[in-house]
Image (cartoon, rainbow, N blue to C red; front, side, top):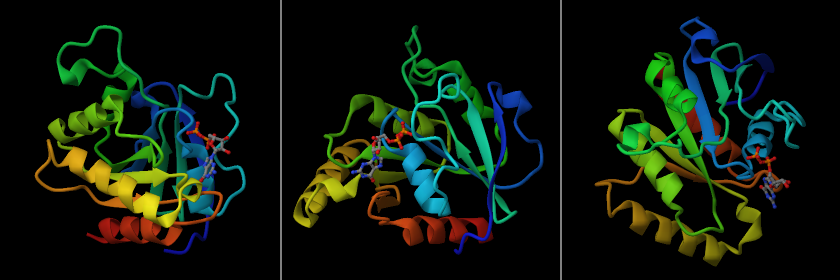
Length: 197
Ligand code: GDP
């Protein structure tokens, strides 16, 4: 997929106020500092579509961007655990779970993880939550330029082994680097395929 246009549409603090048109949307989420804004800019060939330096007050918003006038890229706030967390459904902040439970247009979520780190409980639990909620997801490994090719392979293998403890099959995954522009075609072409179905 070639990026012909990428424009900011709106920021919202409530899911109910998000755009109502039935345009397919793809959500990007991960812990803060995982490289989400940089990835969004890299994917869309824009320098500062998503704000990379934590703009105060912007962090807890759901940001919609329209790409090529035919799909929404949604930049979600970094997730964290809710204060009261018993069942896995209630583990994450309410506005995050509201988003996933209410957006009919959502085609899939991309969970971003820093390729250098061992699988973190919060990321694994968030993927479990998505699975239980019936939301298709893929994994985007970020900052691949920080590792040598052999180490990338090892880290992806370790992550896969961890996932296979709970999942029967691996979700689609992508190895990316925003600073070296790695993985753009893979992610965009994948989105194009799912958007045609
Ligand atoms: P966000 O909080 O998830 O939106 O993360 P940012 O995109 O703001 O990035 C957090 C930090 O990681 C910044 O210092 C970025 O420069 C750095 N960063 C993001 N992506 C990459 C990458 O692909 N490679 C490297 N080396 N650093 C990155």
